[in-house]
Length: 265
Image (cartoon, rainbow, N blue to C red; front, top):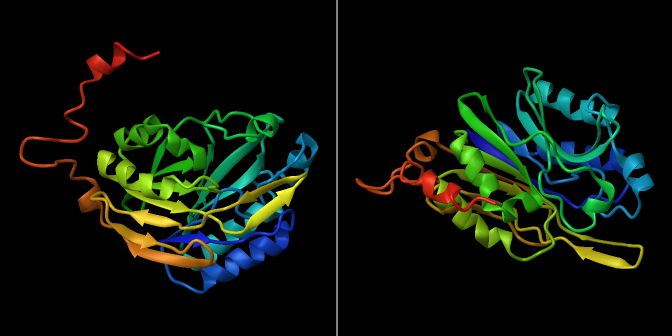
């Protein structure tokens, strides 16, 4: 499967314009699956609960449906981050996986970062894997990566690919992706944004460098830190489904759950 990570520079609050730019970027390339950043079209740096509510969209909103319609028109799937106004009245930092067949799979961020804890509810979907066109795909959002259990859970659920929507401001993950990929023998596709937001006296600079890493730790995509673009790579499930390191070791099969559970707090 040919997959793409999209690296953009959204303008805070200009949702319609940002969506148009994203769709135009995707129009410029060919891939079967596009992975977009966290909060891909809204901007990230909210400064109040009221603002978070104002920015949030329902899964059947006009903004979200633009991605659904694009997916059907281009026969490609899209996974994108957005602030979700859920039916339970809460606002979540979510990613939505839409397919040209009309499927929608919502994931809500499990590990909230920094001031997100002030404005968003902790995710309640848990981790899951969905198969599409022969590839088993798991979703994660940004700070989820910091907890190795997140990606390990997706690997144990059978993921070939972890679609990781991010707005990374810390300098760590792009190199840590190597470890997450090889310890689980999965593909990791991390879509990050670039640019700076400075609101309410605080400045956030996003690190770009979107990556696609294969199960052997090879960087199939390692994007620049300061340009927008769509970066494409081919993935092969034969590689992600072979969990053996050698004739004697298997990265999942050799796990000793009984020992780990003794120290689970």
